[in-house]
Structure formats: structure tokens, C-alpha cells
Image (cartoon, rainbow, N blue to C red; front, side, top):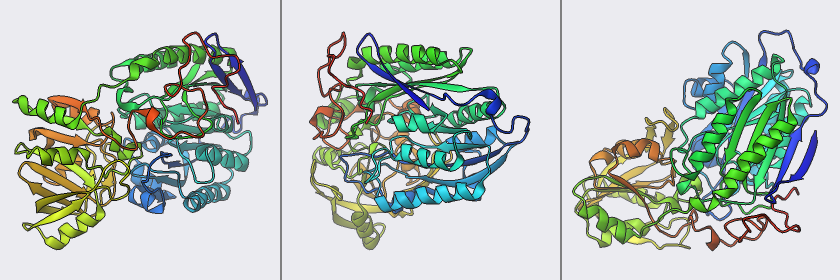
Length: 536
């Protein structure tokens, strides 16, 4: 492998990764029609400032699949592996291990990461020989002892299969693409949508590229540009706003002859790591200079629109007053600072307290993580009332527990399947779940955090968001795909929390500096001594 470091005219540094030893004639199994392809993945999004746990229980509440369980569970779903399996249905699939957390959290416990990585490596070792490897990864996974856990997994698998076997990995749009990731894989293929609705399509794109490599139709050369900025996700949608323009450039580029794949990564912004930032990655067919030029072009456009990502935030009181003045509904409230899919615990009381203080009679749907309160509701029983102490169950750094006198309306096992475009068909598990009611407030109390992209979270508990006045959703952007079709208005809450879009408020210690918006960076470029892209 070779690595080039170059400077752009705006002072941005880009890294170019390419294979200097591979030739088309060296591609294995040139004449085979059926290829033997290993499939697996580890999907977890880490957070440096969150108290939310990241251990084996989170994988067990999400997906922890071995061997044929992968094919049986993920076939037909809107998932990267589902899309990859559909694309490679005429080939010999060797399923390894797939682990995915239902919600993000702090860096993974060292023991669970070591175990899962070792199990995947052993399964690949036992499966040899294989013609290629496809992995579904998030790209922002951090372990307690390894900053770049995704890169570590890819490097370990590369050691097992050797330099000539193609490895292709799909990545979330919020991946933190590192040097090790780009030099360990032959190709990295990212989502094109936020809200994320193209998981299956991304898997299909990645598998298509892998098959082209195996059939000698593609020789990837990859340019990797890391930009000195981190951005809050609230305004990072591909449906409208500044990031939609960047992604339009990416998708248009991918349609051009000679371009095998193109991605722009808005990065998970709450990771305090030395190698960190938004990224553009372009893969060409055996044309490194073009990959470099195209990636640099998109990266410049991305950098120049950085100031447009600021999101308008409203206080809880302003939101409630605005909603009550409008005869229509529902108002969908993004409590993004407490989003489990971004790494928050899901136990914030900020919006709930405001609704209680407002003595709301209008139907208001809210949810909160509190396993002890769910157990109390089970003990109290359906139809009975009690005073509950709720919230701040994992941390009281930003908010405090509150008391809530309510009636237990229902109890359930907390399982539901998404029916909207994001992770359609996937089952999520909130654990023991109770609905507590007081006047207009319907509070869903869950025992385990889940990704809150779909109204089925509420519908599974007998609640209809479409007929409510106010609906709280703990997600910065991905919920919009399923909620906006029936929303009167979507507003973003200004609240404290570990996933606050106010990035300057966090106690950064290790992140590469200077970086926007933590530092002011001149429009015409960085100072000659600055190193915005750390290559540790």
C-alpha cells in the first residue's frame, strides 16, 4: 500500500491511498462464475462524552448473529447485509459474525470488543479459502483500548486473507474514516441518505463493486480527504440544506464513467480522538490522479458551506406555546441532545418537566429511559396510580430526576418493528415498557434505549403520533423520513445533553486542532504550521 499527503489551495490536506502491488492479472479466480464470499460486520457508534453503556447487553438487545443466523435474519431487510445478499445471491456466501447495537454509547468495553473481533477473525480463518470479504460496519466504533476499532477489525481481517483478497466495507454516513480503515480495505462505500433510508442500496453498491473486482472489471484506486471540521447532525440532511448539495455532488459523481464509488461522511461529532473530522472518499477504476482531483473538489465545497449547518433551536416553553396556539398538529419535537442513536442515554427530563409544568391537557407523547420506573409501574399494575421518580437514571450532569404522579395505562415487552423507510422491518427492543398517563401526557417508560426513527415506537404501545398535539422524538434528523409525512411542523429543542449541537461546550482534550467550529479557521486556508489532518 502507498500513502500520499498533499495540500490543497485552501490549506486542506488530503490523503490518497492506493494499491501499488496489485494488477488486474493478479486478481484471483479470474474465470470463476461463482465466488466464495465471507460476510459479517460490527456496527456500533461510539461517543466520548456519554454515560450510556456499551457492553455485550447492548449487542444482545440489538443484533448478535452467528453464521447462518445472519442470512436467516437479515435477508430481505433494508440493511447493508440484506442488500449485499440480494446482489450476491448466485454466489457461495460464508456468513461470519454480525453484531450491532440498538443504540450508541460510550467506547466499547475492551472485553466485548476483543471477544467479538476474535470470534470474527477465527470464523474467517476457519472459512478459508475465500475469494472476497464484505463487511457492514458503522465506521465510528471506538473501544476502551483502541481509538480506531473499525480500522483494527479491517486490519486484522486483512492479515488473515492477505493482500490479494478484496475486502469491501459499507459505512454509515457518520463514519470517522481513518487512515487505517482506508489502507486496510480495498473499498469503503457509504450511505447517501440522511435520514438513513438506503442501507440495502449501500450494501448492494458495495457488493456490486466487490463482484466487479472478482470478475476483473474493477481495480480500485481510492482518494481519502479528511476535512478539519465536525458538524452537528440536526441540519445534516440530504433532503434539504447544505449537506443535500454536497451529497448531490457525490451521487452525480458516482454516475460518471470510471468512478466506482463516492461518499461524503458528516462524522459522528462527539468523539474526542486525534484523527477525527468530516471526510470525502472517491474510488476510481485504476486512476489515482482523478480520484484525488474529484475528492478534493467535493471536499472544498463541503468546507466552504460549513457555516450553513447551524440549526435554529427553541426552548421547551417556546415550543409548547407555539404548538398550543396552532389548532392543527402534530408538532414533532426533536430532543436531539438526548438521542440514543447519537450516543445519549435517553433519560433526559428537560422536555417532560416543561410539559408537566405547563399542565398540558392536549395529547402529548414523550418517552424516557428508566428501568426502575418501568419495574415500579409493573408492581403498581395497570389501571392503578402512583408517584414515580423519573429520569437521569444514568447521569445527572445535565438534568435531574423529577416526580410524576400518573396512572399506569399499559405494560409490554417493548418489542416493535420499524415500518417506515429507515431500517424497515427491523425489530427493536425497549425491554419492559410502561405507558404512564396524567392529563394529556402519555409517557413511554422504557428499560433499554432504542433508535427512535419510527412512529412504531409509540404505536406499539397503543399511541398514535398522528393524532397527538406534541410528540417528542429523541433523534436529530433520521426520524424525519417517517414523521414528516404527517407532521404539522418539526421543531428542534434547545436542551442540555451529551448530544447537544453546541459542540463548543464539550471538554475536548484529544481532538486534532485547529478544527471547525471549535477554532476559527481563515477562509483562505490554514496557517502553514497547522496540521488539520492528523496521521498518527
